[in-house]
Image (tube, rainbow, N blue to C red; front, side, top):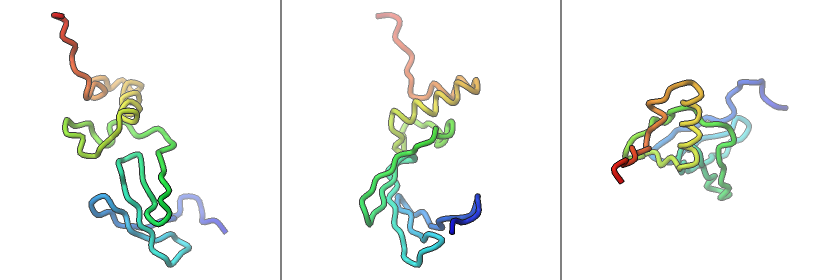
Amino acid sequence: MLPARGAELFHGTLTDQKIVGQMYDSPSEISITVIDPDHIIFDKTGQKFERATMPPPDNPSCEPTNRYHVTGEFAVFRAYQLVITKQYQPSKCGVHDRDESR
């Protein structure tokens, strides 16, 4: 039987780049490695998952060091959503002004 809509299916703790927790219907522990905000790997099986939905705009926030390791493709998706909502300034993150003197 499936849980009710909105029910918690997994409960875990994030430490560094690792989530450790349990599914609602299983006593065994699950370990997940977070590669970046859009990609995870289930450690036991080695299965890699990629985000299937549009990522939230500016989440995580764009920053010069890219400490969350957001890949280019997903950075573009985030910028696209910012443009749709007319948030133009944050959507330009990582885009350098062209040198018009060339």
